[in-house]
Length: 324
Ligand SMILES: *[C@@H]1O[C@H](CO)[C@@H](O)[C@H](O)[C@H]1NC(C)=O
Ligand SMILES: *[C@@H]1O[C@H](CO)[C@@H](O)[C@H](O)[C@H]1NC(C)=O
Ligand SMILES: *[C@@H]1O[C@H](CO)[C@@H](O)[C@H](O)[C@H]1NC(C)=O
Ligand SMILES: *[C@@H]1O[C@H](CO)[C@@H](O)[C@H](O)[C@H]1NC(C)=O
Ligand SMILES: *[C@@H]1O[C@H](CO)[C@@H](O)[C@H](O)[C@H]1NC(C)=O
Image 1 (tube, protein in one colour):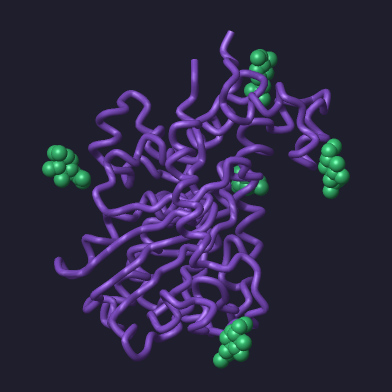
Image 2: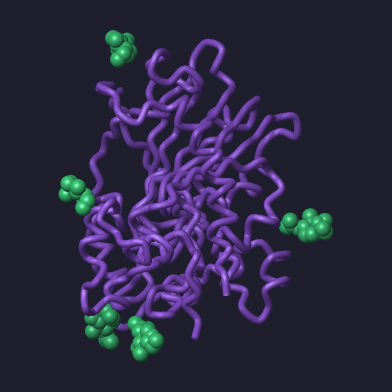
């Protein structure tokens, strides 16, 4: 069976060229330092980081012609899909605002330097801090006699939006929702919902950067990513926050709608996809996870793609049939 890999990546790579031309990948931009805003209203919504701390964002106010334009960027940083890894995460900056640096340095698409970031430098720019471990999509909690974990990503998303609306987001003329990696996945999951919060007249678009995680079959014929996400969706109570039209279509496996390749056709808002064909995460954790390469035949190729043999390149390009 052929995976949808090639088809999807072809479209994505066209966009890669388009986007890369407007965003320098390497720059000497020192960036501007932007302080953290804790979302005070989050508690009333039950929106907490894994450890129960308040969620947060960083806002750099727009100016001039960009005053009514808004760019929101989801922070990335993997996921936790079992109690042990979420407990670990809750003690780090990935699961608690208590452990985060209280200022963020805005560079790249968040830079306020017009020559480095000509399209967005004067927009209102927001970085949404990631502390739920489920791409801002969970809604559950765990408690036993001694421990408590909040899986409240969806509520964090809502709390941040409700905090930003009176700060000018409610009057947005143009808006872009974006994010990288786990934040790139959040971008797919929240794109239409974002549009629903904004004025009907607003021009709203989304851009996912390295968030197109594939439901791929790994080199040991296992669906490693599917198993990982199925556990995540179940642990963190994500299913009810996925697009209902998608979960209906994929019944009895609604958790598949956590994958962009299945959710995409239900997204109505314009969506730009940026993804590398040799995305390191997908290569190292999805296609050739350590569990699928115990003999380490892939080590050279993993460290240096130009050292891959033709068979390995075929595998990475989705030209090999894995299913027996
Ligand atoms: C903006 O970036 C350019 C190019 O790196 C640099 O020469 C210029 O000094 C920067 N402007 C400001 C205000 O930092
Ligand atoms: C509660 O869960 C934590 C994390 O798994 C564990 O360390 C602890 O022993 C559990 N406590 C009880 C009372 O089961
Ligand atoms: C992967 O699949 C093989 C059989 O192809 C199986 O023996 C193995 O347990 C699987 N590994 C994981 C981590 O699921
Ligand atoms: C589900 O699909 C119907 C019919 O195409 C559409 O009217 C509705 O807006 C969709 N719902 C969502 C949440 O996108
Ligand atoms: C990567 O592999 C190629 C081909 O084997 C080799 O020429 C190159 O020096 C390697 N690069 C690094 C950084 O190891």
